[in-house]
Image 1 (cartoon, rainbow, N blue to C red):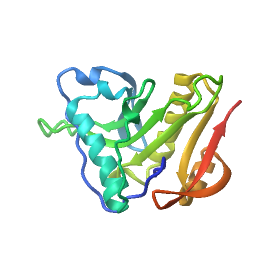
Image 2: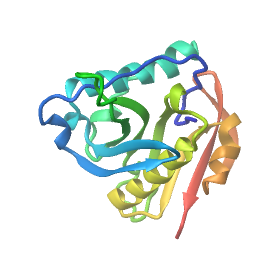
Image 3: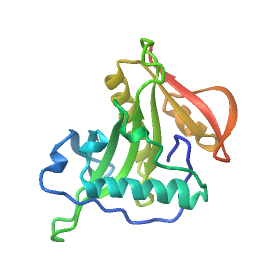
Length: 201
């Protein structure tokens, strides 16, 4: 499941992350828990807090999904990853302890951006680049990813409203997660989208 202006990937591509010394201790370790039979570590951090290998893995997955599979030619790296207040939520599956040196795997990812109108109190924060690795679909991980993203967004920007630019065919999924469509649909990079918003105010 993914949104924020890009498409869906059908073919699986292995994405691995490497633990680099204490780099992964930076950022916020939200939890390490089991869900639907999977043990996942959830991390929330700024881009600069990612290790070089983690950043590479995130970049690779985003390009594989949003550019290659969708055959959508656009600039995936738009400068928004580095802006003040931007956060990145990663779900990591620990490696098999029996395989020495094998890094954890990136199971899911999304990006959290501050409100466009930072001067307006309660303006909506934004979720985007929402991805579940193809090897982890069918386990409700997309729902958990969005839930955690919403919570982090609300806490980071002190808002009760979260906005997304959703692919039109995923509107029902986001509706099940509390989002409502606003306005008319539109094309973004040649793909039908619709603006959606979630408010608990």
